[in-house]
Image (cartoon, rainbow, N blue to C red):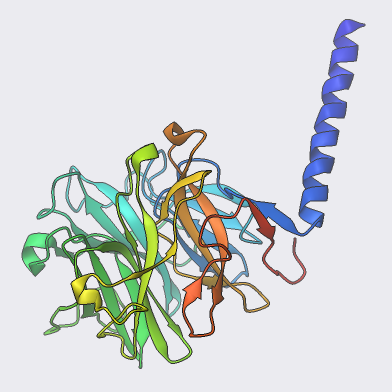
Length: 335
């Protein structure tokens, strides 16, 4: 009788929990974090099937792949690479800070391969797949730091502009860009790198919006748990390769960036955001990592905040800090 009673209680409790989750979704709000486990340096794309796919720095998975119908509820699908197909560039390094793109009919994943302290031996590689969930086929390196002459060549970001394809990358040794081949799988022959920002930022993203290019990056320390100082910053320009300036007119080459998102009491070191994505209402959203102040030992979880544009055209979040809860993205026909 006791066993049956306990079993019934567990069933009822599970039903109540499921009902509460459904009611929460139906209420039109979500709570942060949206991925409650370690998944640093996220990148995201909305694929041809209408779902969002998120990839993160290598951990338990060889670049974890998550899928969501609504930017809020994420399911881990597995690894972007098979164990046999794991990139071998920088043999003893790990895969950091991927960047996902759709080029032609392929899903193309740029990645950093590095180890702590190996700032001249690290570099950028590229892989591709017919499907967003992978597995991805590695095409090897684009370049290594000591080959291209940029110390700490990590954190790739791909962008197309006027029919041409470019890769931007770099960390606290400078941010650079270079033109790629038509398929995006190699550096264009004869292309030369160009520096666009100083030594303040890493995790580069560039967003084109209303006639400006917004260079978004992260400043501060990313990975020190409760001592992390990461925050999201921005500068803008009228041309892809700059010059970029902050809100006060200070040049990004001289580390002039304006803060748009920083820590709260509950989230430490928010930063290394994914490229901004839109929902079905055209609203912009930013996914990024941060430490849960109540459990920093659990690693960098993934948070979601809406991006607004102020009267002068600059991006901002609602309060400049991670939201505890907010209105959910608008996804037609889906929760």
